[in-house]
Length: 277
Ligand SMILES: *[C@@H]1O[C@H](CO)[C@@H](O)[C@H](O)[C@H]1NC(C)=O
Ligand SMILES: *[C@@H]1O[C@H](CO)[C@@H](O)[C@H](O)[C@H]1NC(C)=O
Ligand SMILES: *[C@@H]1O[C@H](CO)[C@@H](O)[C@H](O)[C@H]1NC(C)=O
Ligand SMILES: *[C@@H]1O[C@H](CO)[C@@H](O)[C@H](O)[C@H]1NC(C)=O
Image (cartoon, rainbow, N blue to C red; front, side):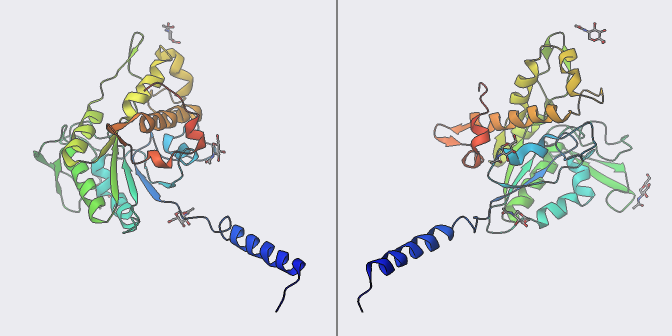
């Protein structure tokens, strides 16, 4: 059969249309990223004075981000209250679900006297202490170091088929004259555990300190901390901490040719975040 010119052109156009619209209408599912953290990261509702930096993460990454951060939690209480168990249950084996763990704001304190049952022992060692607590069902609870709980989290994520990444906590506005504190013990412990366990560490602490240091005084940062607690940011303050996270990802050199595992997912918004490494 001999087709007319017009019907051949028609067939060609039909072919082009069906091949082009096969793609835009079916977006490729995005890789999952789950966030485990505390009040400095969690999402707050419309009427809240404060916001967590995890709230803005989806603006900068081509990732399907679920912010499971919860206020007031430490590594210990996040696990004891079952929040960790449900996070791990939502890891999809075989899909490389990334689990970003940024903890430390609530792990400080003395576990033997802490009435919130969240303090952990400092450091990353193997020591433990038995305290009076009903947090694990009985009347006592063996409490371990911050590093112990991080190692458990890393191991659980790997066993579930996910990819753990640790991140250093954002700073509290602890200024000495014109200098913001740069030394955050719980960020150091996170980095040490990451090195020990051969998982990625994102230096969110360093780049967040850099951003806040640029304000030069605690008073200049005050408008960004509306609760006057030097810890919880306003919405614009949260954006500063999110941008600091993006900067940390962009600046990271795991080795000469090895970038952050999150770098391939940075989007056009992220390319406009240009701060010094
Ligand atoms: C993101 O993840 C949720 C929960 O797993 C899923 O329902 C949704 O379809 C995902 N979205 C994309 C764009 O992958
Ligand atoms: C870029 O950020 C803006 C908010 O500043 C947001 O509305 C937009 O969706 C973001 N773009 C992408 C691709 O996420
Ligand atoms: C644990 O003890 C606290 C008070 O210290 C109490 O409020 C809570 O109900 C107890 N939880 C359980 C499960 O017994
Ligand atoms: C910061 O603010 C406090 C209270 O408003 C004020 O007393 C203090 O002098 C200010 N410090 C500087 C360095 O401006």
